[in-house]
Length: 440
Image 1 (cartoon, one colour):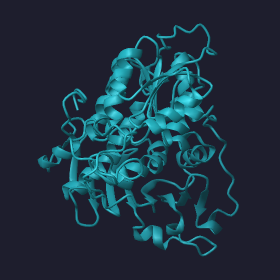
Image 2 (spheres, one colour):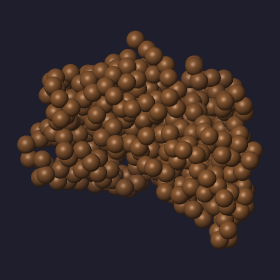
Image 3 (tube, one colour):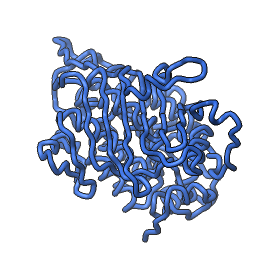
Image 4 (cartoon, helix red, strand yellow):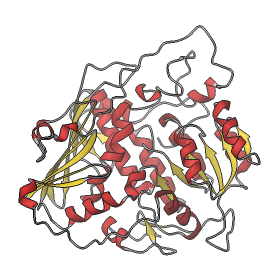
């Protein structure tokens, strides 16, 4: 049963039970059989360290019943706060043992295990909150989104800034035509997760770390001390560099404002490619159709900037490239620059007497609360896997273009780069036995 709505229509609707989320009706949780929205969710946590622990803290008003982490340092620390929660090292065993006890799962692992854990939970009928990027490959993102829709489950990807006031106002200004028709968007982040290189050790993994479980679906290799817990994003087998880390946050804004879905093509340049790890910088160009018109979206990271960003200066004399990250919309009647907390119309003197349009996007109840409410009542989430899956596909397709070294002409329906068949090895991947994501 489906009912298609645009994202603009969705966000104008109030959060009511049975509302449409990502194009599909989402029904209340079944495991807890709650009689009240005040009933606490029974949560299984996959990944208890770093961002995982932050997510747990945001969901502390729910019932944490199971904890899973391959590193006992993180697992035991979480168990000190939740001593009644059952502990696991392997999320597959947790899902098998707890499937009748949990309502929903929170996945905060390295990227390469996002899809195996998320798909397994969705297949069991569990609602899922998963960190960004939603998956490690383009094909996984499509499979996970389809599985969530098929099973009519409440989902949310961890692009937390989406729930903030600033992004909402930018979306309204763009959609109200404040800067006219947008033809270009520049997205950038100066962070640099690059130059990962394997450094095998003659020593075994430390006793707190189950290295085999940490590798999960990735190829089996000797323990490398320079990967867990801080540097895995630098390696292709586990992450996707800065592109995979940050673009879901930054490109989220133009995706939302311009109601984007799938690119027509992408090309990505950077330093010479290395088989182990991501580059120190990249510059990518995506071609879209937005509102029936051509649109180019640019991404750069690691301190690399397109000329438009470097040459756009504020009244203070500062270049936009000095912002740690940002988005610049280029329209027929002006420009709009934004980051997580700022928005600025340019040229500044042209908009000196600007009167903002009346807000039309309701405030969020909170990024995590959206998901909790959706699990309980069927209300919509704004970063559901239908929306976030398409965003993740696009981001990771940029990574594929860099690794392929070619401009890709994209057939989104078939998940194929029609002009570069060899790109398939980066769109899909091989899994170790026991860690497969069916269909990916």
